Image (cartoon, rainbow, N blue to C red):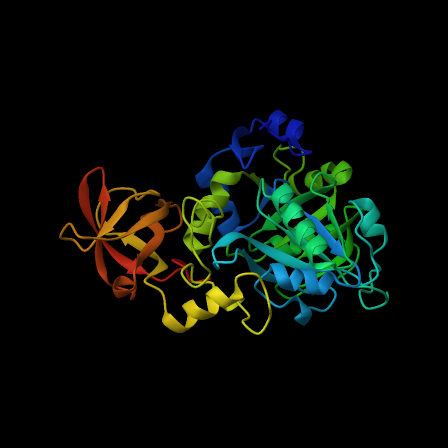
Length: 393
C-alpha cells in the first residue's frame, strides 16, 4: 500500500524528523530524541501530530442504533460534547479495533473538515435534529471500518450517513502538565480549559475552528485537537513555533508516544491485540469496563458467555528485576522453564529507568508482585507482575 502522508509532512521534514511507516502512513518517529520528547510530556509540554488516526462521521435518524450495534459501549449515554472509549468486536467478541466515540452537535450531517465544523454550534445543546457522531479508528483502519459501518447499515436497513473524513481532518495531541495553559493561550475563551476528561467542544484554536477534546494517550493532562487539514499548520506553529529557541512545546514523534503509553499500560491496536495475530477480547485485554452487555452489539453474546465463565489469560505488566529489555513476542515463564504467557510490548521506561513490558499471562500469574521470568535472548530474567499503570498518574 502506498504510504499516506499527513498534512504536516513537509513541516516535519524541514524540522529534521525521522520517519517510520505506521499503519500505511509515513509519520515522524522522533524529532530530537525519544527520551527528550518523553521527558517533555511528563514534565512540561509536548505536541504530537496524530493525523494518521482515522475520522469517520455517522449521522442520521438511526445513527445511535448503528453506533450501538458496532461498538461495545453505550453511545446512547452520550450528550453532545461527550465522548467514550469503546471496542469494536466481531461475532466471537474478538477486538477488531479500539476507538473513541464523540457525540457531535445534533443536526450536523456528516461533512468533511471545515464543512462539519461550520455546522456545529458552539452551544452544543442549541441545535436540534438527528444525532451525529465522530469515531476515531486506529491508523490504517479507516477504510475497513467505513465499509463495516456501511455494510451493517445497508444490511439492517438503517437510515444513517457514514462518511470517511480521514483525509479532510488533521489531529494534534497537546499533552503534558502545561497543556491546559498552552491551549488556554491559543483559544479566545475559557470553554476549553473548563472541559472535564472525555468532554469536547468546538473552539477556535489559533483562529482555526476545531473540535477540541480533553483526551490523550500519554497518561498526562492534555487535549486532542481535530481541525481541517488545510489549516493545521497554523495550529501546529502556535504550539511548536518554528523549532527555534522560542518554541514553547517540544514536537514529539511516535517513539515517545509508544514509551508514554507503555508506562500507562494503554493498548496498541495491531500489537497488544490483533484479530489475526493476537486475537483478544476486551475482558482478556482488561478493558471490560467498555463492554455494556445491556446493548445489542456485534459480539455481545460471546462476551456475555466469557464474562460468566472467566478468562484464562489477562493483560498485565511486568517489570524486569535484572538487566535486559523485554520486547513483544518474548515468552514469560514461571522461572522454571514453564511458559505462562508472552509479551506483546516492551521498552526501557524513560521515566523509571526500568525495563517494563506488557502482555498476557495465565490467570494464575496476574496478581501484582507475582514472580515470573521473561526469556530474553534465551535467558530467563527475573521479573515481577505489575497491574498497569507503572506510574502513579
